[in-house]
Image (tube, rainbow, N blue to C red; front, top):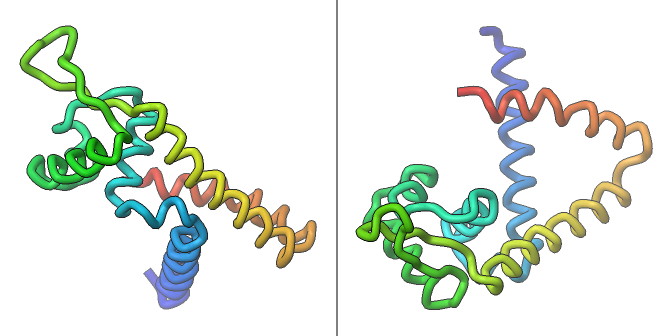
Length: 144
């Protein structure tokens, strides 16, 4: 791997990190929750319902840490716990209507800010470059 490859990696990491930080700040709603709490809500929106251990694994945190996250989300009324239909000893976690509205509001605020930023700073040619870059960036994200 050459210096140019490492420079590209460094530049990409820097700009993506700055963009993520900026997006976090641009959602007033999202600032009410931690990164892990927001991510947990997003996982529940995507998957419907999950076991606490599945959420912990997906978030790469301990079951104990996930318990704390879930306790806070439950307290805020964003999630509900229900016994598993297949195994009554297990508890499934899912979003409440309030939790779903919360995560969708966060996404909407971020999307609106990003759309404004793109329109204000990028001409049509720049916007096409961004569109074309989405496919290779997705490949990078999916790389294990």
